[in-house]
Image (cartoon, rainbow, N blue to C red):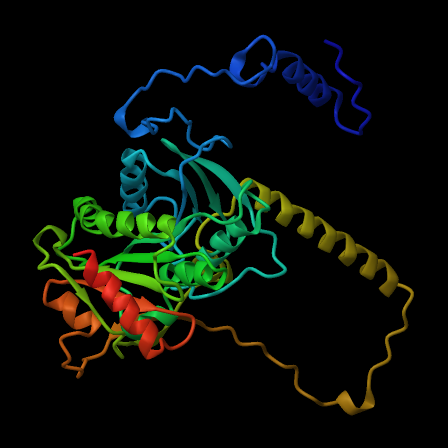
Amino acid sequence: MTTPALKNNLPPGLVSNLQQVLLNRKPVGGGEDGGISSKPEKEEDSSSRTSSTGDEPGDENDSRPIILVTNSDGIESPGLSCLVDALVREGIYNVHVIVPQSDKSTSGHSVSLKETVEVVSTEFSGAIAYEISGTPVDSVSLALSGALFSWSKPLLVISGINKGSSCGHHTFYSGAVAGAREALINGVPSIAISLNWKKDGSEESDFKDAVTVCLPIINAAARDIEKGIFPKGFSLDIQIPTSPSANKGIKVTKRSHFRSTLCWQAISGTRNQAASRFGGGQPGIGMQFAQLGRDASAAGAARRLATQKKNIEVVESVGAVGKPDFKRVTKYFRAEMLDKEQNEEDEDLDFRALENGFVSVTPFSTSDLDTETETTASDWISSIQ
């Protein structure tokens, strides 16, 4: 094999390394003719099982319906891994995952316009998965755009399972609900799932129980979407009670006015610390290189400006004589959400159902549900119990 010469300004050592990598690269699939091997590799564990059709996860010839999973808690969320593992074990779905790199729980419906978003492949056994430097809405929007995956319309989008409820007005802050809403805006059926996590009473194993609770709803929705009989015009917001295995059943609920108050407190800190808090953690290597490039450009501009100033005569404004210098004051604040006491007593409201141990399923749309759509949604949810 002859490797074409690399005409570049790269260091000779790096060029040599790249040439060696190209020479040693094996054909896709490991076959001598460079084709994809038709023989699937031996299964290592039950989580990597495929359907009876023999299609491999992510294969373009995979005939199974595509389910896209996102969340707002980030790639490390136990709720995400439990959900994806369960969907893969079902063996009837082609599962794709795209989620934020870090926690974006209260990002709402924010979009990273005019910003470079880094997307990095990651590993979920039996699924094609990516983590993204953006928001849940970025994740869903990118996935549906056709720019990342070879498809642009999955059968169903699922956002979750997220740590904490999103009842009432919390839906305006919730990144989980926003991911499902973005799918609905693009004409794709979606489900947002949250676990009513309690700091001093919940355990990670509760997410496995939560999957057991919501999987029948997911399967019913997927089945009816494939048949073309799933009602259109709304998505589902599933709220699972704190003790999922002890739930009292599914209750069709209405959106309450449940809300929290944003409480701001002054804190001491530095500029860099504040930036890291708002940035949500360390950026990926690609973003770090981009930042280095911006810093280098800024440094070059500063040097040019300093050179130009040497030839500029500085004239002091008469009007500025005696005017005191402006002193910039920097302060730091942190916001926390504090629950307010709720006065609504209707037992069919989302947060009341959760408090009483029910699985709350609330249909929602991009605008207020009309009576006919609300009735249709309620009838469908009731039919799967």
